[in-house]
Length: 179
Image (cartoon, rainbow, N blue to C red; front, side):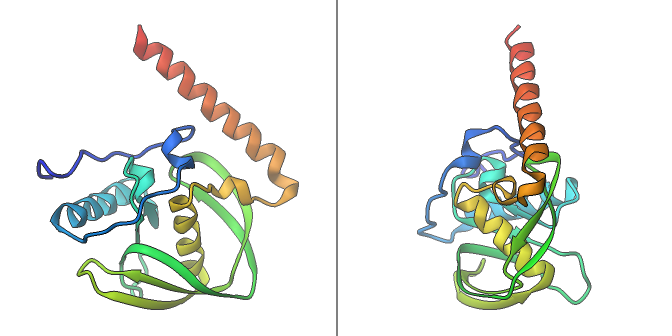
């Protein structure tokens, strides 16, 4: 990556950027596209299907998705916003920024999302199933919301315990680095 693009790496809980509202992208330019390409690389290295810019330490409203299904294209969505939601479905979710944390989350079954693509063109997409779930999950990241905030009540205690363990582990690593 060039000098205009910061070195990106996966950010894990409890990093504060994961709780912040990401900023609107004003210009789709070379450095932004390089960052999106780097996000795909990080996502693939970690076996994910979606990644939002805050998860790589970048506070911009950008997400990438690749469901890795032959009939599905890959997506770079800049300034995405859900314009319509239909139905409801519940399924297990995980997150690259919350390692080893999983929980049942209710989401809309279908969504319509407006976004700007990597060429700077306005797009609208109707999505359902896993794609709709991934879009909602990644847009939550852009708003500082984690899937753990949305888990079914029956699993809340277990998920909260896992988050405390992640925070404690991060604190221990921080102390070790300080030595």
